Image 1: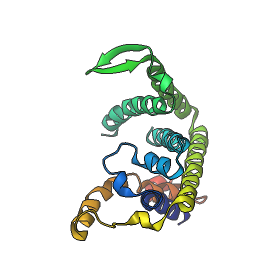
Image 2: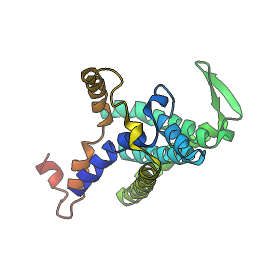
Image 3: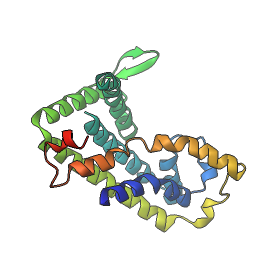
Image 4: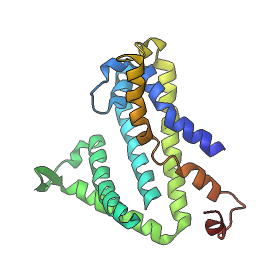
Length: 67
Length: 147
């Protein structure tokens, strides 16, 4: 049950989180919209790196899961 | 069928890790070796991809304990960063950013969203399976009894 709740939260919460942190009209059609949203909100580059590092770990996790 | 799927996914992962790492460390885009369909192949990215493939092969060869530990660490780091980003959003965001709620008419917008939702859910079906298999009372024979 815990795994289902965490999984559901992990899948569903990024969309409202990104829409909450930056105006979505400015993100439409852009690459790495999530990273740009946090960059705009904080006015700094480090959130972009943070999102990319998270994606990298997500990729490693995914690689291990399928292999 | 699974073998065919992995023939595609494993090379994709090897290429993707180099591409993603190059966004974080642009210096990886150096020492061009050759081109495939007009796209340059860089030595550091190639080494990284091959290295990851070998690392995962060794990890799988060593057994489930090492694989599970690696999976736990990477999942933990992803969840930690995820919570951090949620916190930033909660602190620096504003409800006004949600508006307008729909790009076109509400009905069309909902339909457009629904068409992409199943792709986001890919892999989610693994959660109950893995949760069940991780249960303390789940025995080796249960793989065959319950499937």
